[in-house]
Image (cartoon, rainbow, N blue to C red; front, side):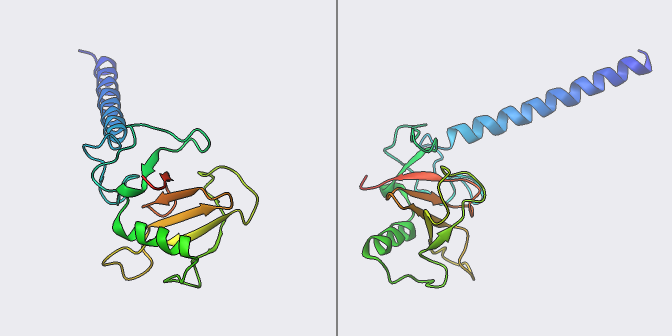
Length: 159
């Protein structure tokens, strides 16, 4: 076997391994909302969600393009934050909560400045505000992030 043939085979081998890793990641990510592993692990888009959800697997909000999450599937602390939002406060972090969320990541539908407000979802054991938030739009729609704005789910309230 010539040196160039060996190099080509090594490149093909590396490409196959890389494709297998990407496929495994995508398969794992795609199944995270199917109920079997909806809880996810910390740092994943579904981290902090309950184990089951009555939203059909893969159901997407047609307005935002984001997957739905039932309110009943949210962590207890997120449900408590939703209750505070509905009551108009008082908020645990008054300097931060009910303040403008800039949507700099561009993951939520594009709206004018001031359209979105953010609210802290307490993370047990965290020494600070943690990564979990609820974002509310001026039209009443609400979103949940468990990973500090890296991903969002549209909350289906009352379900």
